[in-house]
Structure formats: structure tokens, C-alpha cells
Image (tube, rainbow, N blue to C red; front, side):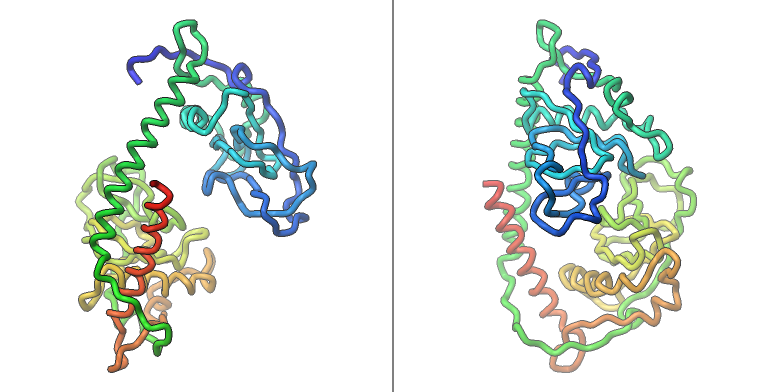
Length: 345
């Protein structure tokens, strides 16, 4: 990155800008065409629909998210054709491909802080955005450098992932097949876990560090940011965290492998007995599957947590069947890893 010169470019000087055409997604039936809207998750895809051909936007373009709380200002590359909401503007250039586009979208996302829900990224604002990008000896945009740089990064990431997942496969080599039919029973969370509420109540005072701060998010395993030790209690790894409230995240449980900090909207579930990692993952899903009964106005308070019951497989003595849960989850993990390695290879 330091061996190349850089220049400033208006978005309008790089791309031809188009508008997406779908204003009423509710009128579209379920189908197999990606519907792209105001989200930076899942590469912008909010669902799959069936729509008129005149609504379809051709792929091999960059979709600029121009409106939407929390997502305005993000940019994503779309290889495939899609139907886009009117909150999306599209940038086209014949030299664009999936590699140099990733370079450009990463740079474009660095200028998104000037936008907010009240200050939209309209077409004129978008065209006047300035992107600092590599240039060649003639002062023109260096498409070749951007492509080769991303290819190199992708190759390194693939190599690192293959090393990691092959090691995980070795750790899973002893997983056993489980019975298809098994007896299940009810268990109270309070009989399996000690509840301890988070204590981080002033995020603005937290300094950057390497300790994961878990909040009541519905994505990223609850990780909000990384902070330094501020003297408040930290929670050891190998526990579950349960979101007590939060818009969209209440009722979700996550497995936490490492030492963490918790905000006050999250409760640590500390096992009362020795439970292995895979069984804790199993329990986290058994808890999360009930999250629909909670909402931002109906939180998961201490009394409701104590009353919360989950369904778990039973052993011959009517106790939680830890062996079944362990091998059930290990088999799922092994199958997923084999698919990932096949894709990477």
C-alpha cells in the first residue's frame, strides 16, 4: 500500500450512476431474485422475490446505500442481477470486477460518517463524494493494483482459514453419530446456571482495548466493540450470555469462549455443573428459539429468566444428556467445516 501513489476522485468521475426501481417490496411475491435494500448485512440482501423484468438491475456493479437507519453510506458489490429498493443507487464501470470493487467499497465506506438518518445520501451527494484511490504513472485510477492487492489478501485469508478449519476437523475426529429418536424433557435455566447481570453502564467512558464488550445485539455474537480493563468485573470465558432487552436482540443467547465485559442489558449464564463447549452451543440455541415471545417492551428480566424453561434431550436417568448434545453439535460443525473446505479448495 505504501509503494503506490494515491489520488482523489469524485464518484461521478469513476461511475455512471443509476437508480434502482422498486418502491413497494410488499407487492412482490416470494421468488429467487435477490432483493437488495438498506442493510449492510448479507451483502445487502433482505430476501428473495419474484418481480417484473423492468424492476431488475443488472449485476457487476456497486450498490450505494443512500438511506436507512444504521446502513446509510455503506457500499456493496453485486455480481448477480437483483431487484433494488429506491434507497439504492448503482455505480457502473466496464473495468469493475469483484476484486477491485472490494477495494473501492472499503474506501467508500470510510466517508460514511458524514451521513445519518436525517442527512440522506442523495444522488448529488453521492456524485460529489471524494474517494482517495491508487493511481498509475499517468495519474489515472490504478485498476490493476486494486485487483491484485485484493487477490493477494483473499489468497492469504483462504490459506489461513484452511489451516484453522483443518485443525478443527482434527479436534472433531472422534465425534459419534447420535440416535434419531430420543426422549426430551423440561429444565429450568435457574437449575443449570447462575445468573449475573452485566455492569458496563457508560460506554462513552470505555477506552479502546482487546476485551470484547458484549451488548444486546442480534448479530456478531453480541460483540459491540473492544475495550480495555476499566476496573469493573470481567467474566471468564466458557459461559453463555443472554440478551435481556434491546430492539431485535432480546432473548438471544450466545456462547462466549473468551474473557469478556458485559453491558447492563446482558446477563451472564454461568454453568453450575461442568458443561462442554458443544453442549453449551446446543443450549444457546434451545434458549434462542423461544425469543419470539420477548420484545423491546417485554424484556427478559430476572423473574422471567428464573421462570424460563428449555427442552433438552434426556439420558437414562432423566438428566440432561450431555453426550447427545455434545456429539449432535460436533457433527453439525464437522459437516459445515467440510463444506467450507470444499469451497475454499
